[in-house]
Amino acid sequence: MAELKTREKIFYSKDGKPESVLLDYEVYLEMLELIEDNECIKIIEERKNDKNLSEDEFLKKVKVS
Image 1 (cartoon, one colour):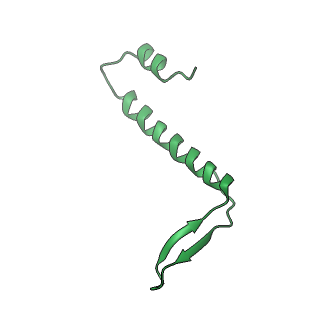
Image 2: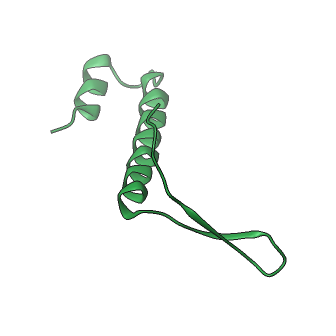
């Protein structure tokens, strides 16, 4: 798993509950990329078990151009 080095700042509401977080822009971009990669992995895993596609058809659909 990727390790992100952050210097986040947490802002709290008047009642002491966390309200928002300030991140370095580069860390934010890395987090977005990790989330997108994770979603792609989920889709690939779901489609691997799809019996309606042959293995060749599956590989053609997931191949990155």
